[in-house]
Length: 619
Image (cartoon, rainbow, N blue to C red; front, side, top):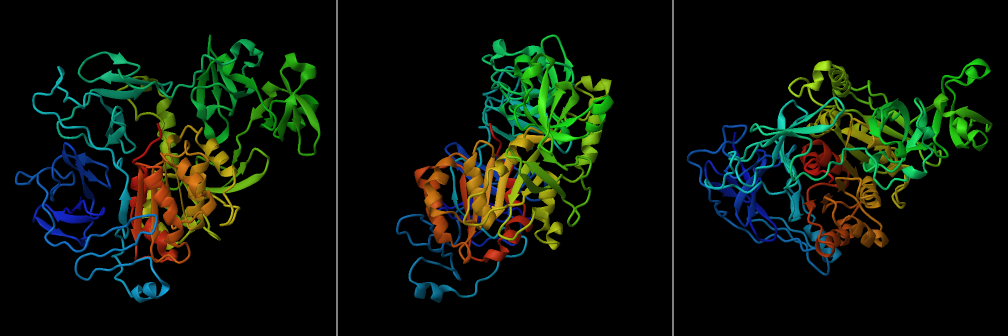
């Protein structure tokens, strides 16, 4: 297999391509897949695989899936044999847009309508399955550089290379380990040359992480130098426990959680399922399934409008069992008996003990046992969110292929007594990244956009690797997205099976506009965003750019898009690049694709967008 490497030319942000086996260079993108990209640093050049996210200091070679270095490989990078006019894309002000490449090059410019009409001639379409977009801007933090190589005399006492002494091995989704350098803030599938693992991570039956020193050192609850764990649900020391009426901590009680360091669980309802000496074990309801150990001061009475279901009533009241209502208030007439006033659908109020109520999630009709093993047309789950105002909001969910089978095997394994041993078992409950997809005007869910698309490489990759959530957008292209989309994400991120650090949002056309806006509403919720063929309201430009100044952004657009012209987007791109200086903003431009084809070319034909998003996790 030919290995082509994408090389930055250093002129106007353009790239050329190099085959290290034959030493051939060219400006035109090869027909073969280009997976490797060179990245120049002050200490040398390293190579990054855009598909596997592997990094290497050695030149990738053909004939090996891991691209092991060849004995005859040269470490120097040649300059291109032929160079056309420098390609530039200078955003903002009165800049001229142009793209010219060697012989047979093409160009566009921002000028008079007559000039543009003269340039609208047929252009060669890129091959199907290739990434048709040129990276016109890449922030200086894309991607993170690999750990610096150690020289032969830079080794620690245990033989670990300097600069890689804190590599931690963790169990991956495919059963193989991946490797995390928490000091550098990134993970790789394969260790850099010369690096060694210092720690191996495990979880015990209570889902607490501990770390085994592979060199024979002590086993610790925290790696030295590791930032304080964000997985603990224990309370802040400043919680108002001294003022709490702890008699709400009763086995079976319906409660709400507050004051937790792990903020994603705050303001979620839960059921008390066990009481230890100084800790309360609670379970989040329905599809969230999360079990937490909290302190008594984290337990509060349910707030107004919490959704509950009557359960365990006897006698004349037994007919209410299974009835759903909303909490109106704590029953102050019977405060010490721990009762709530619950409003039924007919408006009547009932006084009920907290232990006779079962809390309900705001997510309805989401069945964790209903996932596909092979992708099928129109098989997404149709679900409901009851928002904070009591309105019903519709969304679709696709659980990753094989999700239910994996969850069941992990559940059985977690209940096994042998699971307490770190050397036995398949590992902790796997947490899946979430892809929130916002459709365009008149659009549908991600997997119903096109029937033929479910067989494409891109869609199959997404279906295997993400929980895909498609809100039914009830706004138009002139309006801002509604707040309930954020409420939906907040509910989902508390689920045990969701990786709350890897939630992404993307969308095309009106969905691209919605992606800008939703990302700007709560940039702390999303690890990265990807607006495709989008637009934005000009009066919102500065606010969006300011909110997204640190968020990884993968923007995709076409010069031939007449529905959402690039000229409108230009100002937002410019602010992100030059005013806000977002170091993780990447702009992908093509001149080949019309608006109606952008979804297929971006989401279906390649996995580029998904792989880029997965590079990022929230802190």
